[in-house]
Image (cartoon, rainbow, N blue to C red; front, side):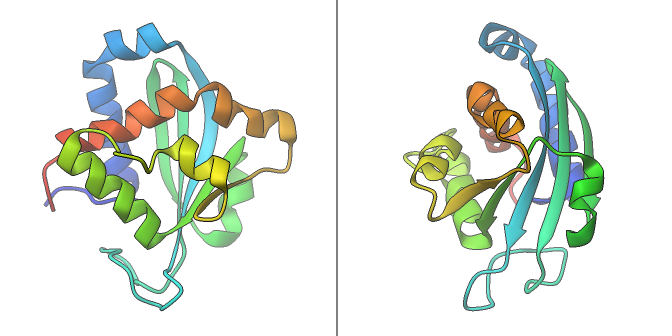
Length: 157
């Protein structure tokens, strides 16, 4: 069975695709960031989360160094700070699903990019204890989006 978002194996699969597309990431530039992808249950308690309790928050810590994804780990809600993230990208399950569905269909999000959603800040938001470390999201945003865009190449659920 193919790994599913937001499981660490899903991110590691993206990391393997990233290595295969190294020329793209080298053209964009290196990344030095540790971040958490936080998937919150939908307000109605539903959602498309799979492989876990649909009503539970899910956190995956991801590290990118240079032109590679070097680490992905599941984190319990109280463990996220122990991962020492620069920032957390937070959204409800339906928002993540909408972006990933657009990527699966079109190879990239039509309008629900990480950057556009974070700038609006109501559907997807950033959390960080340090403004300078949060700035890494904006500095490395194109590489982060291209990483997520690689999900179009993963096998469908």
